[in-house]
Image (cartoon, rainbow, N blue to C red; front, side, top):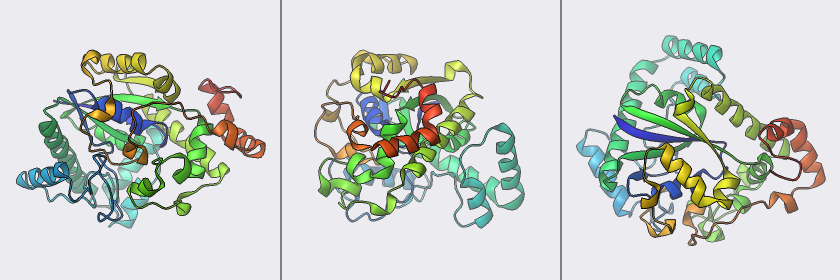
Length: 327
């Protein structure tokens, strides 16, 4: 069986940073998001190694290796996502977050009845299995990390018999996450403005949310994480806080590597010095290995915005241990 670790989190909770930390171990391989969705324009999109993703030697090798195994792999769309955009019914059924056992059963019944989903999911599973196999081969590693974040993706990965899967549940103060949803270019991307958007620059105005929308999205992402974790044995998952990862990096990573069955002492202490080919959040393009806790929400969010957050998601934030002044 293939060992796979899945990072389950609301987006912008520190999962890209955690992914790169884990990739600093010689027994671990990752590309960040195994199903990154649509990469808008390959002509400017940068791999985390600094090369254009089209020119990156790693991605060229992966595409070639996938073709030799019978998979027509494309960088524009990996074919690893559990979705069917060509079927309106299936797209609708797969477009919502994880809803708990009863509603998930209805989703599964609907997919079997109203679309060619059974044959399509078999193709998606095979593509996931082979892509993981290829990347592990490149790195000569034994454990793969998927920064998939979404619980619905995790649901389908858990049903792949060839994967021995463990889950890292990552939590961050919802006020910090909400700020990144409100202004992703300023608070959830590369420090260099020219490298934002994967290398295109720009302010990403079309992705900005209001505080009400941002708080709702953070709460719903954590609700779906809770839904799926209820069905897992306690030995299958571990909880990590973004704040702990930044303030007590060594001990937090040591606990994670032990959970994954890997010797923590073998990892590179300067995580940027190892070979990374991660796609996703723009912080992967920053040059420094220095870690600092990002709590800019304390000085940026207004009292009105904090009140809106509290109405929408404050109860959950406090339940996770985040007080009005932080954790």
